Amino acid sequence: MAYFRIKGQQPLSGEISVTGAKNAALKFIAAALVCDGPVTLTNMPNIEDVRRMLKLVEKLGAEVRHDIETHTVYIDPTRITNFEITAEMAKTIRTSIMLVGPLLVRFGKACIGYPGGCVIGRRPIDLYLKGYQRFGAEMKSIEDTFEFVAPELRGMTFVFPIVSVVATETFLITAARAHGTTVLKNAAVEPEIVALAEFLNACGAKITGAGTPTITIEGVKSLSGGEAAIIPDRIEAGTFVILGALARTRIRVTDCNPEHLENILLHLETIGVPFEVGDTWIETKPYDHTLRAMNVKTHEYPGFVTDLQAPFTVLLTQAKGLSLVHETIFEGRMFYTDLLTRMGAEIILCDPHRALVEGPHELSGRKIDSPDIRAGIGMVLAGLIAHGETIIGNIEQIDRGYENIDARLRALGADITRVESLV
Image (cartoon, rainbow, N blue to C red; front, side):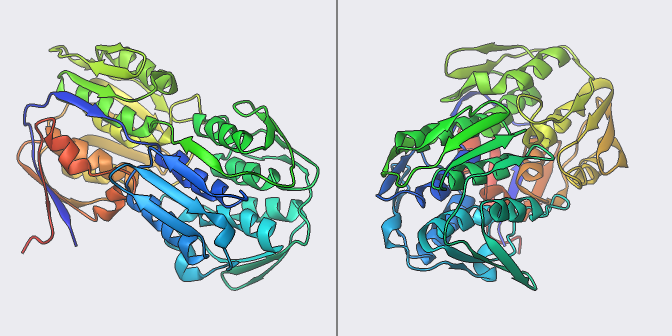
């Protein structure tokens, strides 16, 4: 098992570029499977979740070529011969559930085990199952395996009881090849959904309304292959901006889209972080004043994104006063706060969704494990500003979402080393 060894409080500064968005890359890979020709995806992040998704697609029979040097992926879906995603395959990544639609398009049937993913509370798949059934698929389940049969997918109207990003993207992909018109209401509006719709439209789909709560999709008989670039990762960009705020230094985050981070930037401005924004970059500035505490409540886009809740909570440990952090998206996502408490933070976990953070308090290095992707990177940020040495285990979770993160942080001056064993 690999670990990160971090010696904290090293002076940081410089530039760090943002990779392609994990939350777009995985969906573009799924979308490639409803195309009738090869797809080339550029700006593909070289992260563990992408590798897992590509391996799964390859096991279905698709031809996959992944050039990590150029961050390019080539997928030929016409070679797919397998409609079964085994339980072993499905548990490696949660977005495996998105492949049921493309398999139904190709074969009229699909089989999948229960999908995996981060342990951040209950994450049922009933919404996806209901959606596939609304498209006309008959379903039966045997223990944790689901079998679908749909000789013909039919357009439908689906009202989301709660806003769901991945379910919106899943139905968007399936509807592109279903017969008739599909209307998705109370749909998610994230930038990744807009990018996905633009990619599918470039391949011949007829999608309108992406980026609004109502999306209309006119199904088409075929979609050509094509080429698309993965949009910048707004979560990674926000993480690096928060790092600059924690380090009280100049860090320029490049190759990002600041428009996708307007809510986070508003919160940073409110607590007193100085920064400057350009067309494709955000730069934090040095400062010597004390940050102000504030309340934070996660919300679907364009609200405060849940994936930056943990890094921002680390920042709030350095702000003066009492802050309330309210996680509204995932149950169980705040249990990492116990790790921050072990490092010296003053945090009271009121319930699975709310935590009180009192600051400022200096953090001290500890030996801890990464609970999930986003809490894991939050622990890395905490280690970088803590006194002494921090050892972080279970870093495979962090690798799922952040490309070569230790080397990139070292380029800013961080003392972070990946070690294969502590013995």
